[in-house]
Image (cartoon, rainbow, N blue to C red; front, side, top):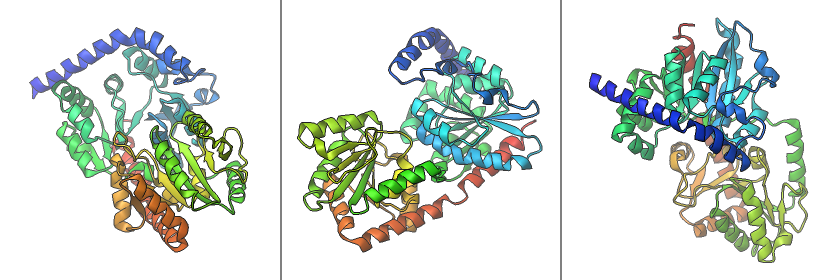
Length: 457
């Protein structure tokens, strides 16, 4: 076993040496280039190097007697999944022997903007440092967290090893280990590195027993592995008053129209949705198709395509106008942060990221919670667990189709048959409510037991 441990430290030493060597390139070339392309925040870029934005008044309001709990999520989906848990943590704070403050970090600009608007008051929000030794050290020196909670698959060697060396508890929540990732981590050098990282964790909360087994096979201690349903089930569905007004306005504008929505559409999938739309308008003259691209910039590309074929007058970009006219046939949502509210105005939701073999689906929680009739393609990735649970509870809760022709037939049936539509909407909502109950409370209990209760604080 000592030889295996030595191999792990050799692997980490190689990673640390390499990350130190490329740090000048990452810090001085890669990050500025990404900022130029809009992939990094134009003002808060220094946070990626471990420097805090002290002009954020929240950074100077950490009471001296407070612990600091750091939650990290790389992108929008994981960030939104963390919000209900963070909210629950703050509600439970009064029951803890020692009070705490919460720091949230995200990596992508889109996640930062949307998550920042939904975090509870008092939560500090920064960008996460890149995993170079210098950036990680600066970040930890300034914030000195008591515990770190990483979401899903954020396993960064320098961060985890540096935190462990400082006595900081590290947990992996909503832990994912896909078959593809498992095969990559099982390669000799990678296996040595991940086994060392996993040995430094105090808690792993997986979303399926299959993934729990994979973590164990990569040498995670079985005593720290626990199972909980996906935090993405526990969405924060409070609707601000300003958004409520927008929803009411859109409902009024669409009151006499038949509506369906294609959400989280990736490049290539828009061709499927436009074909569906063109077939549907032959039968439903008052139809409105709402298309929500996964990345907002794709919205303008879809609009250009429609203009080229002479249908530009039928297309409306939300960034240009919130008012849908009688001539509008396709409403493209090229804005961020509105998707979960838009599910309230459509009875039918087609979840994208699932119609091309190189994709892996998207979360259906928000659409199900809103009571939409749910349709997806065949490629749903790790969301297959969620869909399977819903189907076991309510066979009509989700309809997976194999191709665009089948999708067209399903939408036509729902638009033509109000009873079938209502049955699917009810089934989706009931199934989701059944699987989402108690998720946050369960994860919080594990945090209390393994981290707050077990740490020497």
